[in-house]
Amino acid sequence: MALDARTMALAGRDGLVLRDRAQGAVRVLRTPAELPGPVLDLLFTRDWLFLATPQGLVRLRRGADGLVP
Image 1: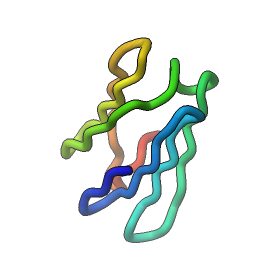
Image 2: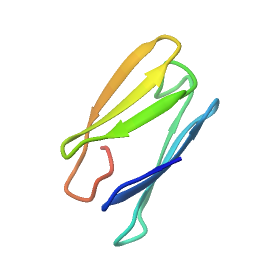
Image 3: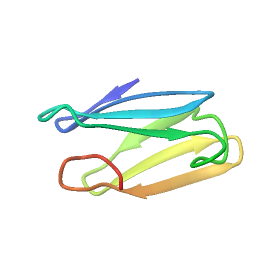
Image 4: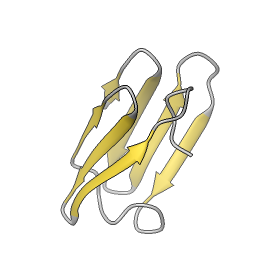
């Protein structure tokens, strides 16, 4: 689980759930459809979300709401 000013995230073997803290919008990324493997770790930066998976690093651009498209 990770949290920053805009977004709350819960990650695991089945994928990733992101929630916009201001509006409550939710985005789900599932393994293996949208992610190459289970999420082992994650990092928020201002413009990017980095996900560590056994298959490698995934970088996703964040929108103004903190979620990914």
